[in-house]
Length: 113
Length: 109
View 1 (cartoon, rainbow over the protein chains, first blue to last red):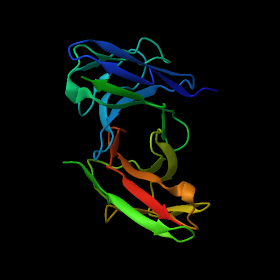
View 2 (cartoon, helix red, strand yellow; view 1 turned 90 degrees about the horizontal axis):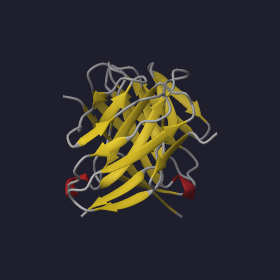
View 3 (cartoon, chains in turn orange, cyan; view 1 turned 90 degrees about the vertical axis):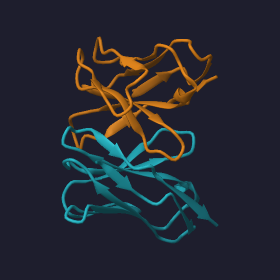
């Protein structure tokens, strides 16, 4: 079982360009999340989806968009990247069994120049 | 507002015991989670508390006091592989996780 996969692993992007970060899970979890992690700050929620077909804004949604066409995939799009979007991006999912902990993908390290 | 506080960095000796504290103020409470994150890797789930008291899982234990908005993670018999960041997170009334900035634990031989 792969769990959660993210692609690409890392990327250098020119400011003003668009990019989609991919996230796929095979655990049939309903809830999925996108976070960014910056040095000295906690994980900050960008967008989330409680179930396929629905999405919501987190703490720092500006400059990002998401879609949830099916249970497995939850892509994050940067329409016009800016240097402040340089960060490590983690996708996570949450199941309904147990305490409801979140499972994380390996992350995408994005540098916007 | 919502706030999770934990020390930025701690240092401990191999074989010793260390306690990492976390205080929180959140809108609603549906449990407190501890995660471990090694440098360059994703966070991984360690423990969960929803009721007051101590939860023990091998060398790791986690304590919760809801009335005080306080938790700690206790690591015993420290090993070099325990060098990592430890993240405290509270699940709020919307079942979203609110995260602390993490405590970097340095283990010295």
